[in-house]
Amino acid sequence: MHPDFYKRPLLFLLIALILGLLFFYKPRPSSQDVYSFVPSKDVTLVGRVEKFYAVKPKSNNVIVKVLSVDGQPANGYVYARLAEFEPLWKDTLEISGHLQEPYGINLLGNFNWKKYLSYKHVFAEIKSEQVRLIKPAPWFYRALRAVRNDILQVFADNFEPEIAHIAGGVLLGERGDLSPELFTAFQDSGAIHLLVASGGNVGFVTLITLALCGLLGFNRRKGLWVALLVAGIYTLIAGADAPLMRAYFMTLCACCGYYLGRNSGVLQGLVLSCTIILLIYPSSLFETGFQMSFLATAALIICLANYPVPAKWPRWLQFFTQIFMVTLAVQLVLLPVFTNVFYKVSLTGLLANMILVPLASLLLGLSFAYYVFTLCHVGIVLYYPTVWCLELFKYLVQGFAALPFASIPVAAWSMWGVAVYYVGLFGILHAPIKAWRRILIIAVPVTMLSLGVIGYIRENHTRVYLLNEWYKNVAIVKMKQGPVFVVGNGLSAEKVKNALHKLGRRQADAVLITDTKPSKFKYDEISSQVVYPFDVSWPTETVGQFGRVRVLVLWGIHATKEGRIWYNTGYSGAKQDDVSYCFTTAIEPDFCVGAGARFVSWKGNIVQTVINETLEVEL
Image (cartoon, rainbow, N blue to C red):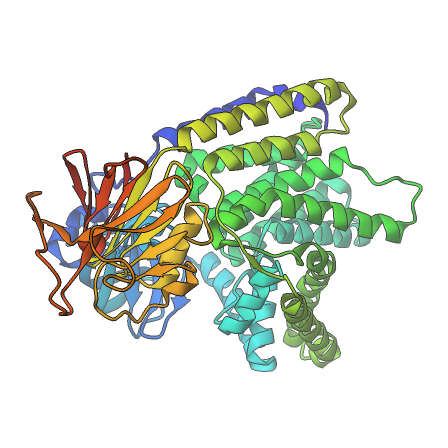
């Protein structure tokens, strides 16, 4: 990678755009967005189907571009749940039903459906009572979706369900309803990305088309036009998601550069396509799929440019070495994303992808060829090779997932930890650049140390996180001195575990139960020390000493909505008895978490939980 690339104005523009979005952008509905009609509840809207629908047990769900609501002009998107109706891509529908805000609970470390939809600029949902087709899609889109549906139907009719889903995922990114066991196997083996139509698919289709054009005698320029057309059609058939659009923009930019006689490079095409996508769809920056796609592609390009395989090596050795280097670079660059989203890391991913990535490319071509042969009524010619490869792919995925340490649960990294990691990785990927070696040796360690120190200063404070899910509460106490405590037992152990992972901890130092009601949750999964009220320690006694932090148990402290404090008077032996816990590093308590983990109080201040929200209180 030539050092001058990092001096280009377009790269500075992209960096400024990303920083601006990170600090200042928040998805909001416009004044004419369908969201403004939510108070009306029962509405009739007209909209155009924008995506391929997802099949759910009771409905077919899809995102719809809104054109009008109750006869009034409107815009924006709505997530439609359509019972007993098949919404087809680009059809215009009239939907009557109940309009509402998406359901969402802001629970630390757990999935928030409402937030997820907002990053797709969807701020409303509708559950249909009646749906009718107003205007079918233009013939071009009908032809594309017919090809897509026909491909998936051929797979479904001729293959076993699981390998049919794998074929659909590899070719079109439509993995269907995989069994939970197989889906987990793909995650644990580090191969889940192979079931998503990605930029690699677009590149593969482009190269195959160029090769066929060469065999047919087309010159380079005509071949590029044909390849662009075929790749564009494939992008639309596969769903035109962000990774596909980014890859197609890259291909388009590279071809434009070729026609203009400019060698801008593939990375310049990536930067240009990323800038265009973020200008049009700024919320894409916050989508995990977009982040992974952009980072993986950048790592792949930089690694191949800075770590070239010696030309003297045998071709087979060059091939596997390049796969190893690229897979390693992609695994390293995606490590923080995988960790912070899935809270686990696949140690077999490097080995698995060296075998599965080439096999997935073979399956991409083989499965499409099988579909074409089926149209010509000679599908039997490729049936057994295709089935054998699909079965082998499935067997390898399950085999890699079954290896010891295939998937290790890990805690999330802080923002500062991620920044330190990427600075170090940048230095490693660019180490071969001779002109930069002296600068990298000094700049990278200094930057990493500076970010680490700033992060430690910023993060080293006592914080209390009040988690509420439909009036069920848990508080997580993260002390400045290091110990982490879970107070209360209102939420499931799995949800509390996710919250701990988000805070960078796999387990708590102790779980402090606040009431005597029996709990169905297994909190011993969260900590080896679970303290029950009126068991070992009674009110006014010390529960334990955790480093410099001392935990006291008191009679239940309660607060009214107005913030007035009142106390339990004693132990009655009934189920409603409860206690509170206070945390101190001196003689007097510094702060207390009230009974039921409903509030935190300190120095005359009090902060109470908010329904379906997570409140972060810095003390």
